[in-house]
Image (cartoon, rainbow, N blue to C red; front, side, top):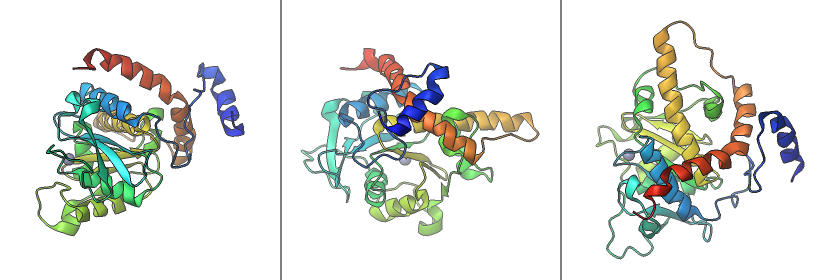
Amino acid sequence: MTAMWRVVWVVCAGLSVLPPANAQAPAGPASAGDATPTEDIVIGSRVLADFGVLDGFGHVSARDPRNPNHFLLSRSLAPALVTADDVMEFDLDGNAVDPRGRSVFLERFIHSEIYKARPDVMAVVHTHSPGVIPFGVSQVALRAMFHNAAFLATGTPVWDIRTDFGETDMLVRDPSRGKSLAQTLGDRPVVLMRGHGDVTVGPSVKMAVFRAYYTDVDARLQSQALALGGDVNYLTPGEGAKADAINFVVLDRIWGLWKLRVAPTLGK
Ligand SMILES: [Zn+2]
């Protein structure tokens, strides 16, 4: 256990939070990805579909731990139906390494261009989750409402495809659109897409999925708080940094719960 994790363990002891053996440090190296990203892609896809964050659309990917210039992404398929056999390998130009006639996602360039721009990113999730849509089209900024969404406390950019590409079908269907999106994401964990959805990234599939889920929850809660009227007392960036460190410590606990949630569907 490193000194930093010893400190986190002491801080969390009062919360009955055990530091998992494979806890991922918030600023870990690019190699700190999942040992089995394919399995986590399957679980994450099904979990997010079960929660309604993904429906028939959206996708979960991971950088290939065997080759950082490749990433793993399902063939074109509804997330709730993804199995390990559906996961394909792509290069960072979005080309399938071994297509074997399988259809691929039109929006795979979201993933390829973010992996290209962000060496620290080991996983990417793209959703059309209903909760976030209002914050991509209005003047109200998405803010951190509570500790599980602490990663939103430093602000969330909104990518407007019309700025660079005029009137389009709204889809990230080529590398130039993916590159523009990655530039707006910058070094943040989340970017909203006007009239479309969002993208979350992380050092593991588990964390990218966690962020996709809690971004949607946070957006719904913020809409409720705003509807109450009056000022909303959001998390500050300082509170966000402290709370997000805890999110990394408890990640395996909630992942274990989510894995049980979708276990009956695996193999189907
Ligand atoms: Zn999309």
